[in-house]
Length: 421
Image (cartoon, rainbow, N blue to C red; front, top):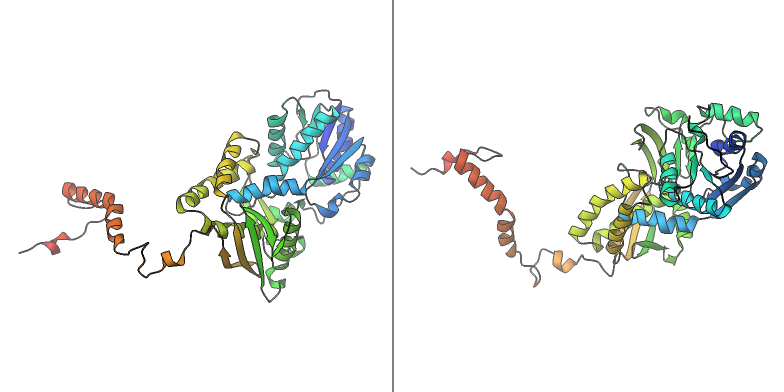
């Protein structure tokens, strides 16, 4: 059990879900403190309905609810997309980069309110506890962080439901449908319940943002995305702000079964977990951005960028958004995006994204350079000298091996056929 320390005022990261709903009365009962709730509107939609009344009825003195959707997309989502960061080949990090933004504002509100502690509803087995607390450490290490799941006797969601019922706190969870979900404008995640067995197929009723491929339209739909310096700025010929654009892509992508991910991932805390992610609009944006980069970035830059994308994804997933390395990698990514401007056309069909075309005023692809005909820029006869120089280290290695041992390191051909009588 964590060491007990007296606190007077706590700012709780409050979603209004099962865990944070019961944390309000629990904090008051255990610490005899004032509780201020903080909710970041990142696009949860109906989850925000009635939140203020619920928080106050639970015992909170006040609640902050802020619309951070545009900041979320502009300062967290799009930079991660521009980096090409994908965790373990599938996950577009929808929960991971939401936590540092929420925690940042939580710290700022604590400072404004004169609070001496923060609290969150993350379990002691997950990644989010790390993301919240490491962010607090980076931004204001003087604040105490309270993690009820590491202190109280509640050990399951069934226990939490019983606690809520005993304290007359209405919750949407039931024993029949007991998924743990996290939703924002970028994605929705599903964990728990049936998903705890990765051999079982997820039930269709679980999905919220997308239809199944079988239920998707039989006719494909084409979308055209416009980018400026790596940022999406338009859809189908119409300029749009970040929030409007992502909402539109979510609707279109969800209709065509785009963006469903089933992943057994390696959590930071050392165990595997099974989750389902729906990221319809984000999946479309990632694909379009990658296709535009394919014609706007030179080989060395693109290949090196692929290497840092893996590290960037790990930093975001591991809660190290506010780290010098992530900041430094952003500097590199920002330079790579200067000329990632143009249009990409994609066809959506039953869960598939098919590239129809891409163009850019900064495109490095030139048909006249790449064609098989003669040109003033590229003479095919020049390739012979290039090949000789490129392969020279391999040739020298083979010659030295044969001279010393009579055979190459990689094969032992029959040289007798070259002997003369």
